[in-house]
Length: 302
Ligand code: GUN
Image (cartoon, rainbow, N blue to C red; front, side, top):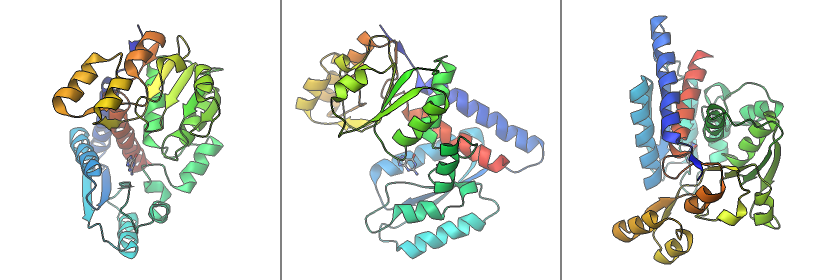
């Protein structure tokens, strides 16, 4: 049986370190870091994320300032808010919650954020620094995944790593961070030929495609470390029957509650083959916010 990599426990360790960093600032007479969160429209998942972010900020002593805008906000108004936050000396970090409603250009908004306040690490300047292997604000989810792997003593040097997914938020930056740690990295995606075969070569498999239960046990090399970044809500009983064959408890939750969360990896199957696996929920999910608050502290201290 594989070890479960407990993301919640690691997120708590990261948050404790942020809390100590905030206390340290206060001891030096500096103000608490300020994080501005911009939420446009009424995407229910985004509202949940933003609530969780605010609660985590309160726990570690970061001042969180929420800016809520209507879904029909014109681009010029969003841009003007970002300009104002860029100029505000009390604001150390700016996060524009994605996805933005239709009609708004997320690239335009993200590129407008001052790179020094870009706690998501999505600005081309910060992406460029990552590409060059230089310090900068780095995307929260992959950097927190790297921290989790380091904590568990996974030595990446020379490992075959396969990153499944090529998003700007996770796949691409994760691949660069693994490469920086001397892994041999393949980025696989929906057009990759023989995806199961490519995944089977991985000593470290990172799945970040948002496809529930895509990765079967037979796709995993025995003894591999599996990091499951997917967070998918399943309501379809037929899909549940297919992907939860090795997880009767998930199936039961789906039956009793009408929905259940799962990753891109079939967790029950992975547990029988891998050496270590992150669960969903309780794996990578809690790490993202911990990565964000780590960045907010870093931006304040820069
Ligand atoms: N929406 C989903 N994940 C993220 C993230 O990491 N950052 C932002 N800004 N929006 C998101």
